[in-house]
Image 1 (tube, rainbow, N blue to C red):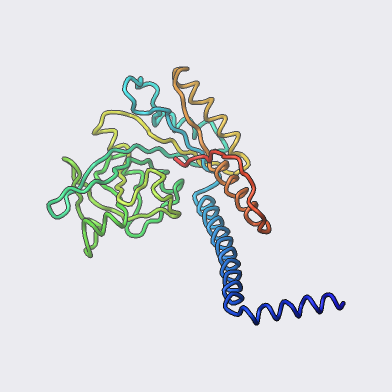
Image 2 (cartoon, rainbow, N blue to C red):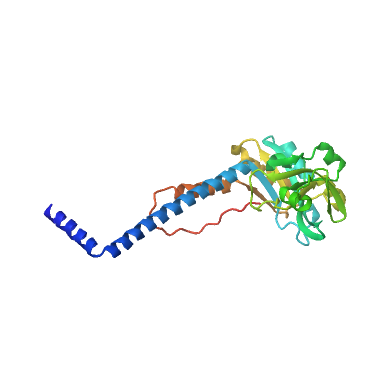
Length: 291
């Protein structure tokens, strides 16, 4: 007991003799501890946000792309088609909705200057699968698709750039040699930060219209919405088998889901939610990428 009192007394005397050093040391400890708490808090908050974004896109989503699509020498019968999309819906009971897309780089003229936009041909089920929010106007209906109507939906950014403060609905937007009537303004329900076909400045039109003018029945991406997340692995396998049965054996397709990304994000979140400890050597791993 005497030793403890003597040690404490010596420590107090040392602090009194070196007040500036004691203050600076204490300040360093406080700032260091606060920095650790702040970093861990920001990391956990960011992970929850990322997981929420992924779940908002839809954990029961399956999509497929042709590997090396558009490369020179790629046979046309390798490409995904609307018939493939219809076959998925007709033969897979667990699939509740399907959609297909195709992109073309285009430009619009704004104040005498050409501005690049991403022109996307979409099918009727695209809104439901990608959970698009219609800010103004409406989405395409069956007659738009069947009649190959020259109508389009634009992102909020395109609306502001082309029409300014004017109402874009009913307005005309010209891309290349074609003019389209704007019937709606949309945005993604959950932002994919440019990792999907939807960019900030995007215009979507009926895929049937794009097919009519290009003369090619081709999909860049085929989407399938599954009724329950537990059926995703089964649909993933069925989709791969179906495409290989409908196309030449040499054709290669990349079938992807959000399940792997969601699982990886949750694993990271669990690791970072543990009490803070000394850094350990972590093996590098390759995270899956979104379409």
